[in-house]
Length: 390
Image 1 (spheres, rainbow, N blue to C red):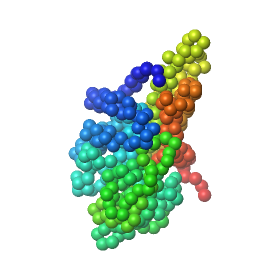
Image 2: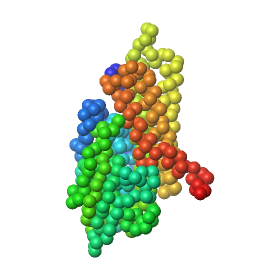
Image 3: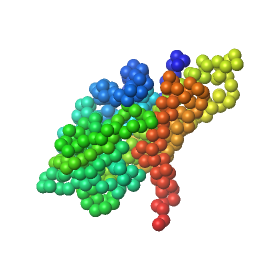
Image 4: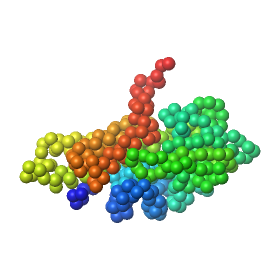
């Protein structure tokens, strides 16, 4: 592959602390993550030691309260950290986003006692989390989930199967949504389940077209018993907590998508500058130059969109519509940009010797996770035109 180092993204950051944070993340990404990414993804190896390093560096709890070990950074900053990590390796960027999602319920709806007991280890103690909402028969229709939690004195007994769980089988804790009451969204409650709980097991990881280093697996709960002190929020509040978490999580996916797209653009530009045909660099040809210009423009638009949504969230204003827009646009952009990057590299783009084909395979999943892009369009339309008539 041509040895052309991409220029760092010129970011607008609100504080000197944020600038120092991005510098730290870039150093870790360039030194510890990017050099190993291709080989470890090909081997299907999950980089647990990288997440230990990120935890020790204070990067697994950035949006949460410093009182409990978090970084107390605004989403405007946290998302740009995710973008930098995802540009180096999506398994890492998405893994941090998922860990943040798994910590959300406790951080925002847990009691003071629950947060004091569990959050320090979750945010800076080396633990890794997973978020359990989807099931084999309830993906987009998450409110129809069947996993049950039945009260037994001061404990709950959880039984069911969760599907498509990132970090399934390797997580230290699982935030699990289970049915404790009536059918529909009002009968769902959130629980914090230890990864070593008796009766909890994971199936073999799914065989995926991309992100081979990030395990995605079904998680089985066979009579898992947890105390009522591990119930998060009120009974029946779980679905509302889950949707609130997903609004924030979609911004994480958007930022990761822009990271992958930026990496693909950097690879395409580097190749185009050095690959010569007909006696000159292919970057001199107008058709290719226009492709690069379009790719860069869509990336900048996506970055602006996710940051605008983040600033609404940081200001305490509604941002669900903008989060859906950001997730939709940024992941569609990642798919288009990575596809174009493969095209620019030509035959080399189709080989595993160059990173473009990996970026393209990874981009696809971002259009699916945490609400497919069809679901995002439904969310946006409801904000514009109201609920669908039956």
